[in-house]
Length: 291
Image (cartoon, rainbow, N blue to C red; front, side):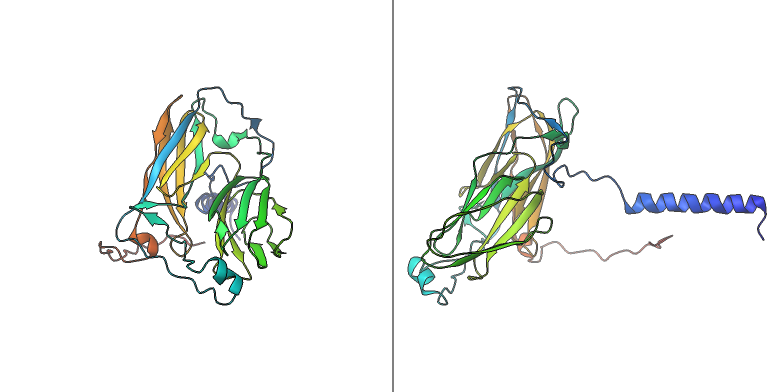
């Protein structure tokens, strides 16, 4: 049997171990855009001193070539888009299109967090069209619960399949001439792949945020995020290249009524190609406790 003092020490050691375990395995999340579009926060009202975040997305190195898609399985696709090519990397003059840029987290000038506020969901639907047996646009940004109008402009049947991680799976067939459909995403998520079960080469991506501070880079690589309240933010540029997409992160300070630059660059490493830098061998350290 342990003495009373020994039992007290054992109890103290056990408590400290549990606290250490909780601290090392947990921690506060800094992403202000990962939960649902609830209305528990303060409604955001523009003060008139909002600014913008502007930039360009570049691609360094030899641009990967688009590959011709074999559409022979559907004569309607071949007839409408005989020269259809992959859209993984849309690069022109060293600039990269179809990159999704958004504010991930941040602090406003008044000290509040971007996640403390709620923003009005647009009543105007975003549009996703199936035209030429590919999705237009290739990358789409919406707010939580904003309607997405889906149309079929092709003389063939498509099957729209949203494959999210946090939102419910959504899989609908849409024949030629069918009425447009509407879909909403109730949980913020970056980014949701969309595919067509009828035509496996068709894919699109939808970014869903609780706020309106996002943009998609144009053909010349440019983007602008408007109406951003003054503050310091973590801005992320996401592109589909790589096994699970590639992210670039930058800290940006937006001045009152001003513009903050945010230029991002992707390159060969995003394709999983070896870097010119050699990796040093890993150094192993003994771990005092595993969990």
